[in-house]
Image 1: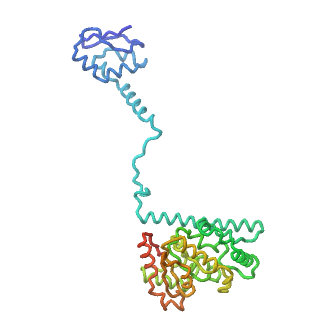
Image 2: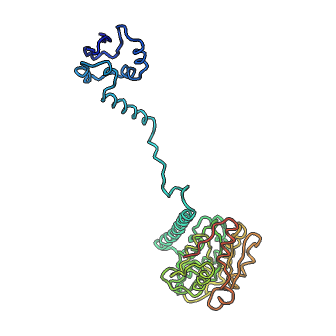
Length: 372
């Protein structure tokens, strides 16, 4: 059945039929008006879209031609909804607006990036410490003795000198230290899991500077495996007090209330003692047992495989290690030892901290934040 529309009247009447989908004029019409209507998108959209049955009927009675070619509110809303759905159907997820969060790497300041890098390295040092503790716990639970070689866990050092702890001298050293820990009459410092704390806290490829000490503090609770450093809550030793005084005079750093130098170690300052263990209240009790050969190997490896490292040699014992360092590749700063007996004979006023940062910056290396 065809739908007939009379263009001679202002109002058209037509019967509703569910199958009537196309509107075509049969009577002569005004060609200009018809051409305009044919160019309109509205009649074409009405031809393509099949009317729903419930919208046919009484709603289509007594409509003018203008009403006929104008979309109803419901059909316009439906067309808009369909268009939106089609737009989003081809994409997996909507694109979020640009983020203005300061955590974006492009928006981070140099200070923020440095802080993030420090936290990353600190987490790695703490992870290494946890690995050592777990290995000791497993050995104790099995009733096995401590194995010194299992306490060096930092991968970069194991790669730098992979067979050092397998050499004959190192095996003799390991047996001595293991016997001292397990069967000795006196406690051994630092705690077993901190013996290689200097290497486990400062990766080989991150070393910027080296501060050489002699042997660990031999009082209870003092030694923590980092030269000159003591845990928080422990009285700051006189040598470290003098180090803080020089740091204050040199860079204006405030004197901290603790002596934990872990922040320096994580930033790339290798705090290395020549001897890594000691008996309770017996200074130099583990000297000439093999530790000197091991720590000499550490210094040689840095000298041979790295460039631009600053060595801070305080006192005669440390300065004797200068022969292990290639001065054409590295920088050596010498001064008196910071102990109370010698600090006034050349340590105070040496300005090693500012000079270290100056040398690093000249090489394009980020300086050390010495403030604790």
